[in-house]
Image 1: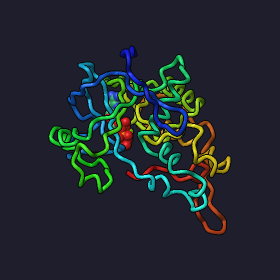
Image 2: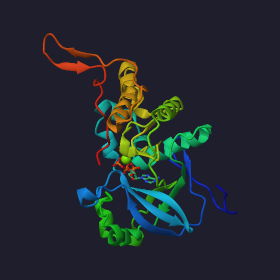
Image 3: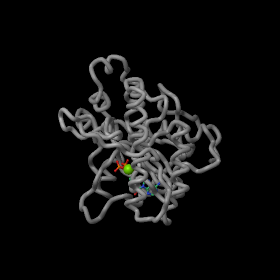
Image 4: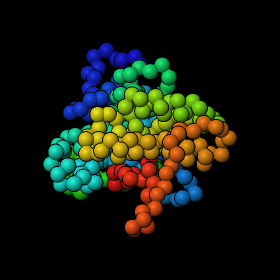
Length: 285
Ligand SMILES: Nc1ncnc2c1ncn2[C@@H]1O[C@H](COP(=O)(O)OP(=O)(O)OP(=O)(O)O)[C@@H](O)[C@H]1O
Ligand SMILES: [Mg+2]
């Protein structure tokens, strides 16, 4: 993207690599539509934030605005000992969904792969807190997970929203499992493990959501045995196979080549499999 003369470029997260650059435009944002909402469910469903179709300086983009993050959410799954070994800055940089996406897209950009590995992201920007009221009036979005004391402050004193600017994808062509799997494998090869491979996180046949991705180096890995780590990282492949199965597309393409082995313990009768020794770690929403 061309950069305007004199623009100061910042990168996030500050404390850790990889980082993503700021979106390089003077921006006037016009909100047009709230995306990804299932009308039949009624009411607005918030995931890690909200995605809007917007015009920035009159050009169309998708703007993903993230909820605010509480470091204790990232610390909850850790033991006391593990918590002592990791700083708040790293927990935040790796677990906050905004920073998790910055790191994933930062890595994708730094590797300059020939193949498109995800829906393109053009950088981050901040949206003034004053927009909160307008977004509620326009789209009834209200759950931003702000710190309770911020609600007592006047809007101009509150933290601005963190957002990512992405290509707006408006069509959903038929799935191409072979290409999608090649991209997923390439992503994992460069150290980006999406950890949330499912249909709603693909747009136009490309991954669009890295809110809970593990981008290496990732702090959790030092607390896992090699077997636990392999099993955790393999889940993307199992989820990919489930996605293809659910889509109904007929294909021989399979991601998880290793068979799933189910065992019953002779003493306790407990059923376990080689895919479930690590629970799916999802930050609380
Ligand atoms: N670039 C884009 N172009 C068009 N639609 C998009 C784009 N990015 C996201 N969407 C739509 O918005 C939805 C939510 O996006 P995304 O998965 O990134 O957000 P999320 O808050 O992390 O969601 P969740 O936590 O529910 O998975 C997607 O399922 C998709 O329908
Ligand atoms: Mg999603």
